[in-house]
Image (tube, rainbow, N blue to C red):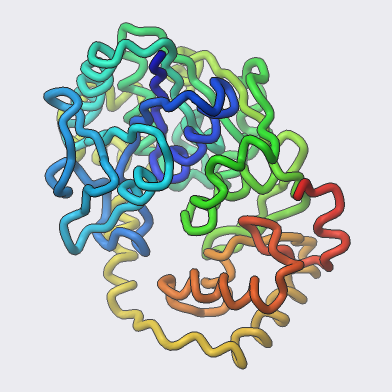
Length: 372
């Protein structure tokens, strides 16, 4: 029995897909997870998604779809989290290559469906930005989700759209999407997180990190990203909802517009036209800025007092948790120092580690009700 899960936006959606597979279909199931190789600039300094020609060691699944084995490697200077995911998780990871637009992604999904004959097909999005109309002021990254939604809507096989943790990506709030959410399919628990717990120790996804933390019982308000966006962590946060695929398409203007695109450039131009921006342009600009940054040695004697100052300010804002990505930004550290900072803080104050988040309330109140 083979199942196919399409990770709508790549990145953390692929990790959440592994959680979903075990939770819904059992620990013995090893779904094929179709996902983008589209990582943050800390991982991949090249803007935009990587295609099959950006890797060595891929294995063909169909003429248009490539499997990402553990031994695959991105061609420098590109980077990717997918080979490490393939090494640490039992699933088959297959690459969405959007260079031929929605037409190409549609063809890839159709070929894969024909090849593996999946029992079920799920399109999974963490946070719900796949439901964006396109004009929301908080929208940051609509292109990948819109391409996969456009492609899935053109595939003849039945596909179920699932939204995990509405609002957790900080692009749309739970209230923004509540009206279109369908029935609850599952609520993640601490047990569901176990298969990906080691991945969450290093994977940079903030949304999936919060999804896992809330599944473990963490509640409060989490600051994320460089801007310190506050995200509510509630009892609804670890919930997975079904959404009608046609309803999602009728909301998402960009997805409808890109359906006939044959190149990524076409899709990106439509994003600029409809949403007023392209996230790849943002990555291009940020990549130039990051080139000017130079990492320095992490100094505990300065980092820990800075942390205390940050925590005091965060508590005054009603914040209870943060991500290590945001902490790195808040302490004015280079992005490459995130893992060093994480190790330092966990070793120094382990009681504040609400995996994979950092608690900035006192340990007793932070972990109340949290499943170990």
